[in-house]
Length: 149
Length: 149
DNA sequence: CTGCCTGTGGAAACCGTTTTCACTTACCGC
DNA sequence: GCGGTAAGTGAAAACGGTTTCCACAGGCAG
Ligand SMILES: [Zn+2]
Ligand SMILES: [Zn+2]
Ligand SMILES: [Zn+2]
Ligand SMILES: [Zn+2]
Image 1 (cartoon, each protein chain N blue to C red):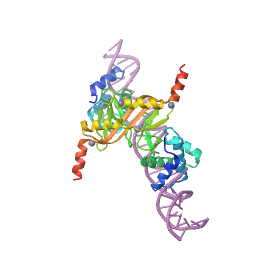
Image 2: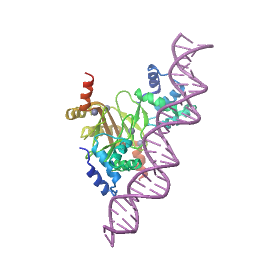
Image 3: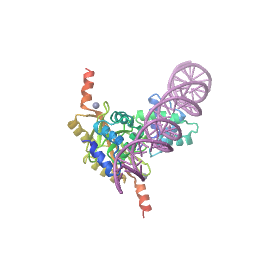
Image 4: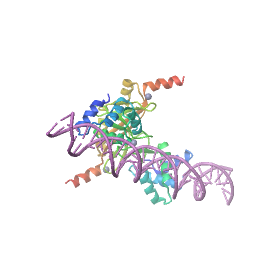
């Protein structure tokens, strides 16, 4: 489950950031959306909530949130730099390449064996990792098969 | 082992692309480097090999190579869009966050079990995946521990 | 309520990337 | 080897996303 607006907001405050109206608009956009959004999309949706919102503030807020780990930067092979609300704890995500839906999941220990093996073989000390899966969500599979007969 | 210049060059030709001097310079840069390089870095190094090289051609060549799977786009949380020569077959990479060295490795079956489980639980059809590991290479571990006493 | 200091947002600057277009070059057939 | 031809090239201009600047606004502590 992705973090909600209140959780993200109070975390920002405990970190010393003021909880302003523009920032709340950005939080709400990210919390309400199950997708990954570009800064421009966050801006557009945010303006519906708080019309005076500026694009600059969207960038600044996204950077703060990413630093705090409250949102994740999602990278796509073409069209990087989109953002999605994090889930609780360490997690990865699965992106629908048709509609952009993002599902978070916990990697579990699936990778720890791989990491251990690589450390032994290469001497690398692994600090972090990053896993993204790409595919089609159930809804888009249905749509597509209907369209194709 | 990363692909060499000759392998990449002949693959380009069989795909119908001419093997020009500027393109060979780009291939050589990528084949010789164990790191991931930004387009600007490829351009700088390429000019040492072929001084008339243009930045535009670097971009175009990188796009072709990425489409053919001969180089991989490496995404870093900060500073996306760098490129590294691929290895043979499907593979992932491990990036040294201190010196930028990239090691390719095969994901093996570690991920297929995860993919199967996710497909069952979520209904997503997984087409592709993308795994990056971040850490410190043996050389940088040594350097750092020396520096720190 | 008041003041201070963080935060805001329009405009301009910035910079990586793409497009344009006249010129060049690899490659095929002879 | 030697054109002919279509693909490729690169300088410069256009483009678009991101960052910086700076005067102003508004949370929050006292
Ligand atoms: Zn990226
Ligand atoms: Zn979908
Ligand atoms: Zn993980
Ligand atoms: Zn290193």
